[in-house]
Image (cartoon, rainbow, N blue to C red; front, side, top):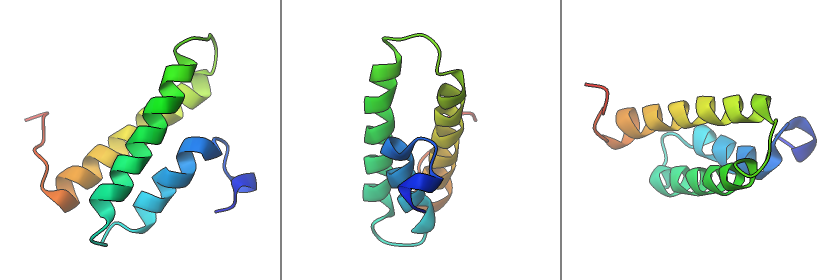
Length: 80
């Protein structure tokens, strides 16, 4: 995806890179890069109001990343 197609390219670029490589040996590193970009953006959003849609998109993305970690990298399922 190009940056023009992404609503929040700063963190969506590494997020989609992790999703597109879900079977590669680099998956753990790509998930970590996506989480870091999301963390940085969340720190910026924490100091402002609004951005409700982006906050929801971040929550959804983190949920998908947790699923990848659980299913592809054998991370524990903390909900159990």
